[in-house]
Image 1 (tube, rainbow, N blue to C red):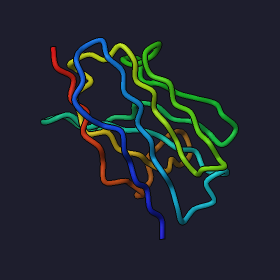
Image 2: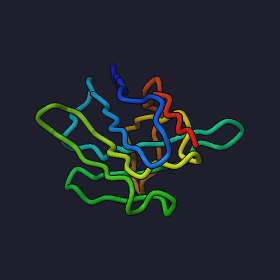
Image 3: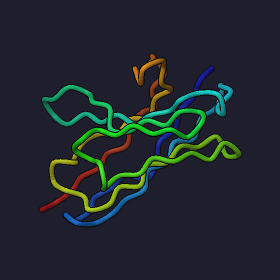
Image 4: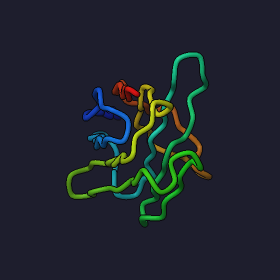
Length: 118
C-alpha cells in the first residue's frame, strides 16, 4: 500500500522560506519520479515541481528560481525548498508519485497547507 506523508507547511510572511518533506512507503522509491502539486482555493491542482529517479527536475514557470525539489533515496523522502515566498504561493501542497511525462498518478498524500501573508 502506497503511503505519502507530507509535512513542513505553515504560515510565513512574504519573502520567507519553508521546506516541505514527503516521506514515501509502499513503493520502490528510488526508481520513481516524484512531484509536488498545489491547489489554491477555487483553482485546479497544478504541478509545482518534479524530479526523476535520475535527478532531472522540472518546475512550473511561476516558481523557477525560487523553489528547489530534491530527494533522498536513503530516506525515501522528497523535499521542496521554497524561498522568496509570495502570497500567490498560498495553497495546499501535495506529494505525488509521478508517471511518464511528469503526469500525476493516483498516489497522493494528504496535503500540507502553506499560507503566505503579505
